[in-house]
Length: 149
Length: 149
Image (cartoon, rainbow over all chains, first blue to last red):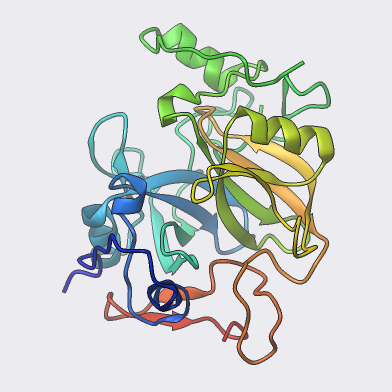
């Protein structure tokens, strides 16, 4: 049973909008977003936002079937289970869907050091989150967050 | 000074990739994502992921200039400051950038009831987060999270 077979293109009626927002049937709006939905990944334990990936129907199906966070890699053009080479897998605790059913939230437990493919210079270990820099006051420079360099 | 003027299309060199990942210059990759970057919005206070929006350069510039979370509305085709009609504004604490510089994280303080445009049936107040349902065990049904119906 695939959860992602319900494509809809007619968004004209408020009744349909209401089903999307208030219903209990999964009707993910892949077509609305060009075939891929953005996926936020959050660490269940401390709430840290770890990364932003994308999912096609097959990636979500694989995630739900295996329990490991899987994405569609837009750079490699294929399915990609985070940690399949590094071992830093992300075990799914729950998958949430937003009001418009056009984005996903994977809430995960981290099985390895980090979710990012980059490494800290000071320790050589994977950075926990891909979001390790913030835009500084000037608005065109970045500053590394503490313990991320 | 706009932080978002640095467009780059040549991703061929690892040196350039390294500047993107390890540099302190903002080089947001709008072109890579069709002109819009996904924006995760997180409540600073408790780490809750509130919504997923999109930003073009003008939306980010407006966000940084005003301190209120602003997006490019893909449904209305224009800038949209969350809460400009409802009053439920999201005040920016910091804006983080990911390793690839192709997604953003707005960390915010909530000035109103919620970040979602939908309302709880039981209270009539805005839902705090747009992610109020999870995919249930069967994989094609949704279940409302506690205190979200």
